[in-house]
Image 1: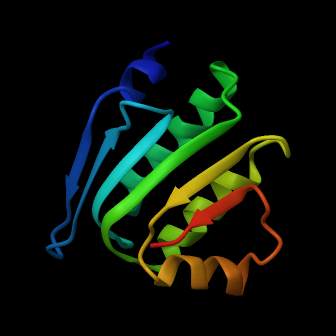
Image 2: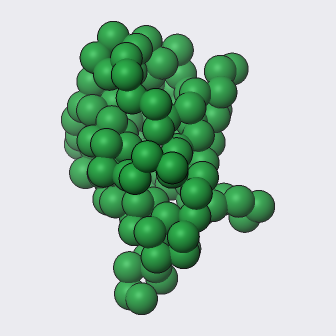
Length: 124
């Protein structure tokens, strides 16, 4: 249960490179709202949020979780890879809906993980 308590709290990380990532739970549905940049510097916080999302889906038997990313300005390959790895760990009936990500994320997912059907991207 300690993990679920952390999943309901906000998280923020600022990296020495100047990039910052803030994560907050969504109020109206299961998932997170991300704000900032997802880079190698902020990726550890992103990975923790994705682990919490996967855990929450399993413990609460959620079928769909959302990542609202309209305020994310950049996602690098490390961030896309972390999302793909988290999604690959889900059972086939579950899915992650990525809402309004920066343009690079759908391109990276299509390029490196074209058959990853548990991620649904809802474009800008």
